Image 1 (tube, rainbow, N blue to C red):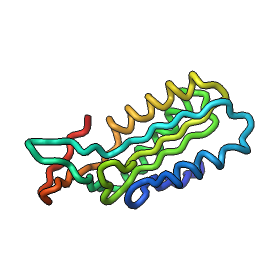
Image 2: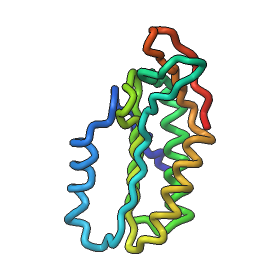
Image 3: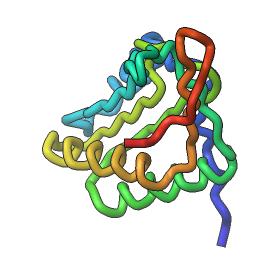
Image 4: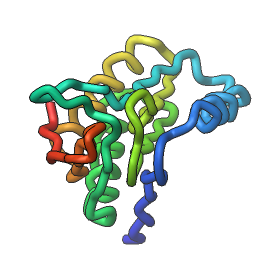
Amino acid sequence: MEKRKTKNVFIKGAISPEFIANSIAKHQSKTHIGAHDIFLGQVRADEINGKTVAAIEYTAYEEMANLKFQEIREAAFGKFDLSCMHIYHSSGIVKAGEICLFVFASSPHRKVVFEAIRYIVEEIKAQVPVFGKELFEDESYQWKVNN
């Protein structure tokens, strides 16, 4: 059995609006698709113990994380009638207000993509070993708790 190459989903720094727009535009020629749904995870400027989060620094053991992303992707294709699906996650520093997670799913029908996106995002949060260090405006930090 031929082993598929694992895709690297990590993008250094924030995921730009241009990257997201280009990803969407590439699907205009796929006329069998009737619906797309997108999840965009954005870094919040949370206030924690009187300090404001200025950015999050994301790290991961990328080989292991990419394998988990691939497992989630394959499970989603097995569970939902998807035409295509893409996942991108930031690595490194992402400032408050910037995009750190981009999940894009397509299907012939809208109901499927709504359900698929929710499933995919929840699985990412539960399974993928990506770690975030919250960097505060005063230059202190703490490890982020995923919720």
